[in-house]
Image 1 (cartoon, rainbow, N blue to C red):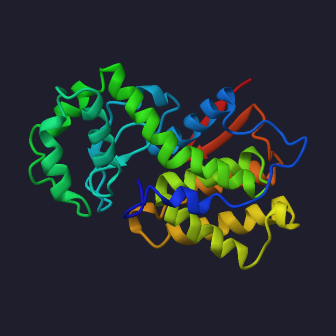
Image 2 (cartoon, helix red, strand yellow):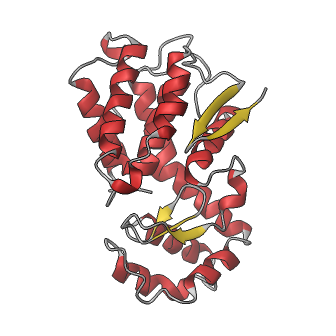
Length: 257
């Protein structure tokens, strides 16, 4: 559920100078912790921890972004679904989604289904059975959202919880939205690498994230922050150490050791 557009070159702008502090905790891009991050996002995006079952997910959730689909909610109205299908078609030209590229180009920036209905959802489900399409989703997730967000958080001196907070913000708001939320937080707090207290900075960041979510009716339920990330923060779990317990939309979740 991304904000209205992203620029592929923004990642280079966002990667601020600064090094991860020596002796820092395990980063979010550690394979085991990255899987935890995927489960946390899936609890909010798909109400399940089984994120690997979401390659085939697709529906219009009525948020003005057209179809939302896949493991992090690529959207037909925000450009990332278009780029995903382009990349997949480059690798596998004869795929079920290739015929819809002109329609995806036409509806980019809108919530329209014109040229996509009635066959697009079935084509998405068929493509999702292809390991190449699953790999394409993983690659787009990493290069467009996960890697830039985590590197930005590392540059700010944040541990795994802060890295996840940045990534989850990027998933919903795009990298531009993440940068805006970060800018709001910096008005009242400093990052650890700038001499600030990590907990205080993350409190400011999550406050700014909630304020941004509340601007849209479709995102007005802020439980993915308030009864998840903020609970981890209040518990002093800056490293996302297991076990983790949280709620999203009132539903309880647990990741055990």
